[in-house]
Image (cartoon, rainbow, N blue to C red):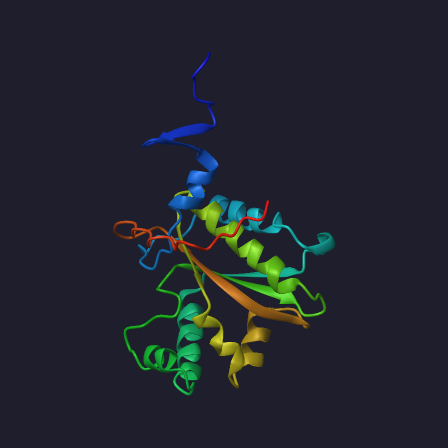
Length: 202
């Protein structure tokens, strides 16, 4: 029918946007969680989404460590804060000295994404996998946040101890981490998007 909206599109004010594109716009970094653990089927769906991220030559240079042991998550947070306290970067030092700060926002699940150091573009591939996890979490109604503070532990003297404890393979470097859980409170508003960031050459 002429003028009808495609079923995969949504009316959003005066704009017609794809439901899948709207999912991207709706995603937020969630830093407050209820105590409820992530359901196993949702966790597996999020990991599968990560595994289908693009990678150079199909190399898939990633390794995922899922942590749901709350004591271990707290340990990693405290060890990372210890490293932060000795940094020359003031905001990291301040967080390290803040007794209320938790590196993983008290999330019930943390996923560490490690990259194969032998692959030159592993960082980019692991970043794509991390973004896929965030979008999958949004689709499933979960809260998620891309956090890196909690990886400071691997820069300290306890780094090798925790690599072994977490079963991270030799030759793989922890690059990113994602917190997962059920959102507590309202979803935050998106910050205004920057302007003048696109140059067209046609």
